[in-house]
Amino acid sequence: MSTIILHDCVMFDGHSPELLDGADVLIEDREIKEISNRPLKSASAQEINLGGRFLMPGPIDAHFHAYAAHVNLASLDDWPMSLLSQHARTHLEAARQRGFTTYGMRSIEHANLIDKQKVELVAQRGAYVVPTLVTYDTLGKMRKELDLPASNIAKLKEIQTAGLTSIVLCKAAGIKLGFGTDLLGILHAQQCREFLIRHEVLSPFDILHSATVVNAETLNQQ
Ligand SMILES: [Zn+2]
Image: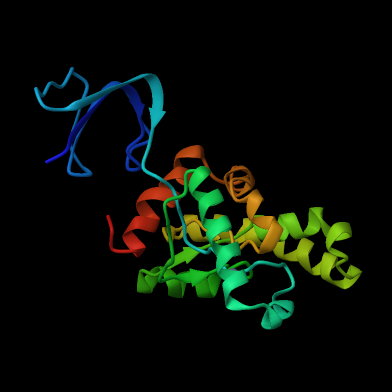
């Protein structure tokens, strides 16, 4: 059995907005067994002192296109699978370096244009909603590089504004909001900006809770 003790971290557990300062964490065979605010000991454990660093569950991106090697998805029809796989490997590795650990989901995606009536229906059914705002924001910011037509820009702006309103409506109705990005090709590098954009209408706790605990629930990995 492999045992690791992490000493002295600031712990965010995904459930509570309160941080646990000076925490020790006991991990046995890759599973967290104990989190404590007193020093944990084990004769056989590998011990790592985190020196007050922040520790949290790895965020989950619920809407991730690993194989989207280019923003123009139609152009990928002619690409060989070996080349697409190489791009997928690069996208997944870069996302892992940004802290994201898991992908894939059962939920209502985007929901940018959801209205009050549909929000009530979703809330009644207990369904999850995964907004994906950063993809529209980034397409708008990179419109020149991507050579997007003017008609697309107007539509993007409309969806962006509606997306934030949808989040407010969903939250007020008690709908569980997941976290996703829906980025394509070179846009994948913008994955972490989803956190910043959501901060216009959500608290830091709500955003991190979405990317950890709520997404884990939708994957049955809570
Ligand atoms: Zn998508």
